[in-house]
Length: 207
Ligand SMILES: [Zn+2]
Image 1 (cartoon, rainbow, N blue to C red):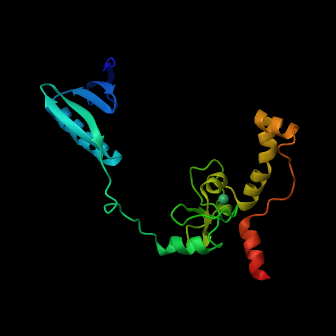
Image 2 (image 1 turned 90 degrees about the vertical axis):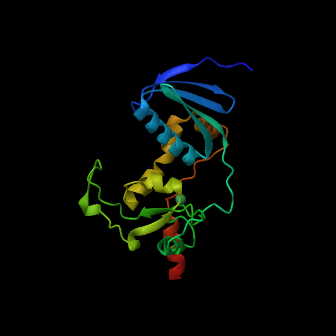
Image 3 (image 1 turned 90 degrees about the horizontal axis):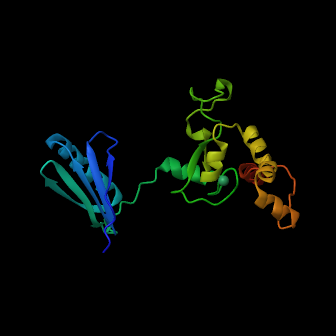
């Protein structure tokens, strides 16, 4: 077996100097420090291992500690916790037939993002507009997929619509893949106003 050269570094949290080498899955780190530093390293290593499902071995040596990953923890399916889904989440999920309020994609309740239809007023926003602010109450919460939720961010619904309408022009100017595809007729820009799923959904209930 070829043992890679040791690399040395300084620990970010000021735990002293350490060196480590990686052999297969044996990620080994040797820390040097006094008794107090060793105790802290051992504690944080076990928290780290628990979080990532690693089995580690910690050997305390004179003047330091060697921490190595020796395996992965097998997760017993019975041990897996089933997260409790709140009744509020279930209610929000049902609002528009189990779909994202904006694009209309079907979403699982576990993966659903909860968006504030009228954005919340946050002091640290670039353009805080208390007049546009929505409340953190269930009637202002709508189901959303991850993509729509992150794109909508702090926009009002009209700003969000304008943002979506601007996407094609943006893709055309920034992406040569887009321009080539368009040139060869692989994609075609069909202009029509953006209609959100919740608008179609509400309209279908009125009929
Ligand atoms: Zn969506």
